[in-house]
Image (cartoon, rainbow, N blue to C red; front, top):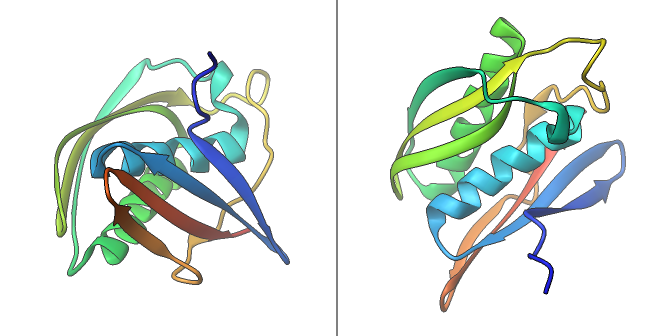
Length: 141
């Protein structure tokens, strides 16, 4: 039996997004990050050679998702680090602390699929239904 995919792509006019599911809030946040970087470059070629600690706060879980993904996008933009491994150490409705891993973007090895400019609040949802967590995130490309 094949594992359920970490995310599914949402086409939205000039933008693109992901819909993710997970058994825990941590899994949903990790899957959303994985989906964002996979859209940008395809994670199969990204090796977990460089490690960074990331911590973000927010007023609620939707803002936390935007802040989390925006911080990871900032890491990419400032350090050119493509990330593919997301280990959430601590998470609640207003805080996430994680270790993320990846490698520097190399145009000879990594694709450049989508230039994600920002994480948006448009259509943003982070919900829990019984034992399943779900999130929808649209990116400005």
